[in-house]
Length: 320
Ligand SMILES: NC(=O)C1=CN([C@@H]2O[C@H](COP(=O)(O)OP(=O)(O)OC[C@H]3O[C@@H](n4cnc5c(N)ncnc54)[C@H](OP(=O)(O)O)[C@@H]3O)[C@@H](O)[C@H]2O)C=CC1
Ligand SMILES: CC1=C(/C=C/C(C)=C/C=C/C(C)=C/C=O)C(C)(C)CCC1
Image (cartoon, rainbow, N blue to C red):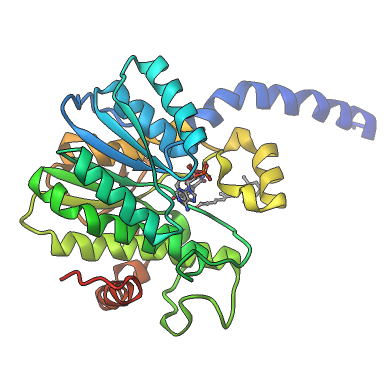
């Protein structure tokens, strides 16, 4: 019979040995799917929102390696310039351009689009990547609840302003970075700005459901234009997304081994942006570079249509 000390000693030796042996397998599992496409993007123009850090930056780095002209659309020019310099040095691609875009301010979105359309002739890929999560209750410059305003309405307006150029340059792609968190979301039309009740985790989920519904309705409206729109979940990624939560920041640090790196997290965005087999695939939702399950609420066409018209009303635009 083993006594307590022998059992404890056995565990103290065998657990680290097991972890050491299993570590590469755990990492390979956590890393998830890789984009295997070798597509080149010379002559293609790409906009990536929130590309100064995290998943967006790694998406920009990969597409830069493929030869694309990349517009890094960010709210903080200093951070964006630092990321652009790093990507230029790393890839040798000098066509990495920084432009200011604050998705929490429709004036900034309109200024960005106006400048972009005046300065650039083409646009082939729009990656709506920027996002916020777990923000304490706050509002954008236009009075929208922050998650809804940045994650959904900001990208909705940006896409509206750039769509004509995408159509002119077709085949073109719109890639919306959503999340598995959309499963927990619902579109609370009676309280879209969270003024009656607010939970910051749920507010994120609602905005990510809005991303899925927007993609679905956009794809339906773009049938026959050779502009596709797909949404995706990047995986659970070790990035700055958790910055607004002290607890999540520490959990993310402690369990970082079990989270994707930003480069691993960028794979599905890259896949949706370049994979040849997706040339005519639209309105779909991907995770780990393959089609993934969408929640029933994310497949509700009536809600998608209503969200579309309410978003137009809130933004004061007419998008038929
Ligand atoms: N990390 C994860 O586990 C998951 C991430 N996602 C999604 O992936 C996307 C990228 O997130 P991730 O890289 O992880 O997070 P990061 O926080 O690392 O990056 C988010 C980016 O969005 C930018 N951003 C935030 N607010 C605004 C704004 N008002 N205007 C312009 N840009 C803004 C940030 O800019 P700045 O640096 O200036 O703040 C930053 O560049 C998000 O849409 C997120 O919801 C989905 C599922 C899981
Ligand atoms: C359960 C659990 C974890 C996993 C959290 C996950 C998987 C979060 C996913 C967040 C998403 C999808 C955010 C963006 O949209 C940790 C922190 C690793 C360790 C502690 C226990």
